[in-house]
Length: 312
Ligand code: UDP
Ligand code: MG
Image (cartoon, rainbow, N blue to C red; front, side):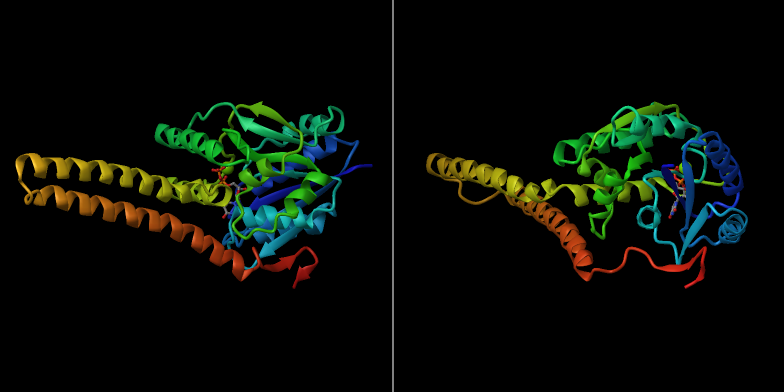
């Protein structure tokens, strides 16, 4: 029988986990044509997530878990889950039931019968989300698709089912700064997009503030495009052209009207403008340098403290 690994990153999900576990076991029961393995990643939770996972694992042989030494973020959680997964197919799913486990049979069918390598989900609406957040999200997708060669779909969730070959491709990307939406798009393969209507969180609270999402989007751009680095060159070139034209104007004015001095305010404006642009471009450079610095350190993406086999 084919084996499906379900990878679930959890951070402070004590309220949602029992609901999730009930639902996923129900779906697994319906899909009796496949074997299951549930891999929960406890991302340094400070509530009762870990004791709950120990309980699940003790009662159900299909349950495995990896508990981190601290909170490393969802990206690290997904990586740990993909590395631990032993199935022929691997599904990534949130613990809050916003990624409905009931879609799993449909995703599975796409991968096993319809010739796709991967079935991913996409929200069709952004209902229940502040309008300003939706606006920035749309902008982000527009920008990143224009400047990077990873195809990133608007509204795409991390909820997906993949064949082993896709999982191995993702695991072969050893970068430290992981931006999964970009990685999924970058590896390619034949992906079926399954749309579904956004569901509210079953219990607990979202871990993403607007600011966190904003920073995450900048990470994504830095990880999958070097276009911002070209901004300095383009601006520099434009300013040279403008400066040259201005020189011509000043020379002509001096020769025709003889007024050589003056223009203190315009001088200040130009100095401040150029100073601003230079700092801005240095900032971009610094961003990439910082990423490079972190990559060269080759730090582990996560550290494990405990698994279902006990404390390490
Ligand atoms: N999550 C995680 N580590 C974190 C933050 C979130 O493992 O540092 C998990 C969380 O438990 C959930 C999933 O990532 O299963 C998505 O998080 P959340 O529901 O807060 O995000 P949203 O759905 O609001 O985008
Ligand atoms: Mg959620």
